[in-house]
Image 1 (cartoon, rainbow, N blue to C red):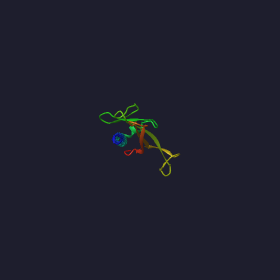
Image 2: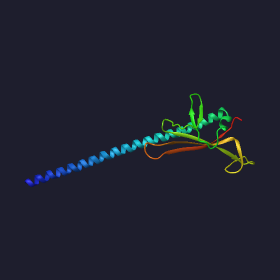
Image 3: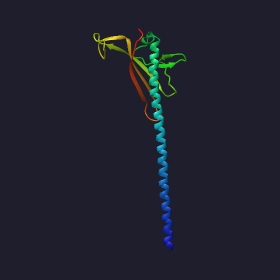
Image 4: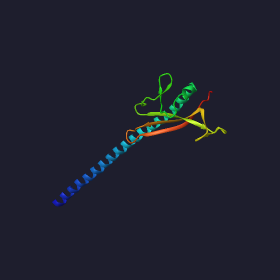
Length: 162
């Protein structure tokens, strides 16, 4: 009879160890899932911020254009510029600054070429349109983990008020 009692106590200890192992695995998995969901949330938030910064940048460039085409056409083609709000109006700069210490917003201007006969935009040949620029705007950031992420857009900026 004694052997049977010792055997039962041994099985009780094994059951306890198995139960603790299962509970530890469940708690560990919960922490891993929680951590991953926080990472995804942060990445999603940064992605939305980048999209809003792209929209803001496009609107800022339209405001600069609206203040006078001479300001826009004076910018050097192919140069990487940044946008800065000086408290009164938008300005362009080549200074290396980050937005909120995270986001790098840049834009470059390229010439638009048009067919001399049809005036349609062409990729090669044609005549340079002095009343239009192709804007390539991008926002880059380094998430809390992983490689640098970039969002970009391209659009035409035309001299509407000439």
